Image 1: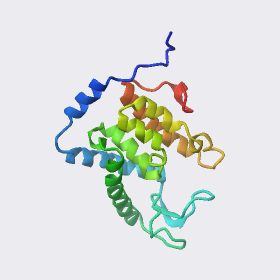
Image 2: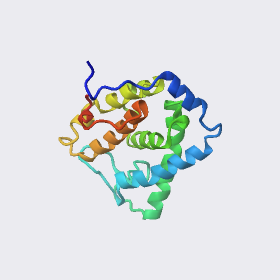
Image 3: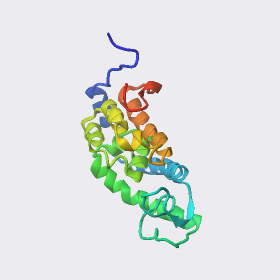
Length: 192
């Protein structure tokens, strides 16, 4: 007997139909997901006009979470410069995430945005099992695997409680795409 929280993942035929009916040109999709991603990352990352180390043991960051050569101690930038750096970072990571997840451009915009936001902070690239499940088309397993890691479980202890909500957002988007329904609240914590 199935519990009320167990669901059947969508069929392979369902996903094949989605991918077969996706636009032949991804240009509009790319623009749309990036338009969603920039404000989402600004919200998640906040803004720092001076280079800082956000949490103990972290790397120096500036602007909206930029860790590139501009993030050296003592440097300052404007909001406009931070925006430009963020756009540059998103552009660079776009090709990286498309190599990591070949069907990325065929996924719904909200899932592209969630995956790209997690890739931006390193969570998705640091979870090869999640990526494997995504590439196999098992979005339900991917949603569960994404939260099954120490960074998520120990976020409070590591002084990074905001990470939990960000990771749950990605897990929820994977779950919803994989099942067609919103995830149950009991799923938080990586288990059903």
